Amino acid sequence: MTLLDNLCQVNGQQGGTIHQFFGRKDWTNMSIAHEVCVKLGVQFYTREHFDALAGKCGLTIKWQ
Image 1: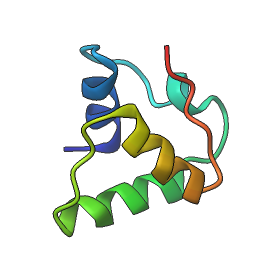
Image 2 (image 1 turned 135 degrees about the vertical axis):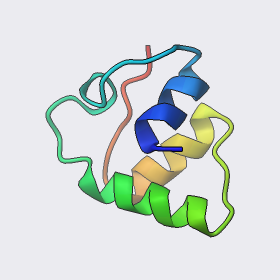
Image 3 (image 1 turned 90 degrees about the horizontal axis):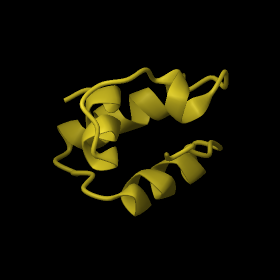
């Protein structure tokens, strides 16, 4: 599952763009961190899980 797919699922929507969550900020590190976590078996079920990861990457997610 990609970062965008997982964000949309947690946000209760069926599609969107990565920029609706991060604006024009560079989200590359967040994508890499998400990919590594998923490979290690970490799952993101809630907004709080994503907010914690985003905070470690220096980002804030714009939830709608």
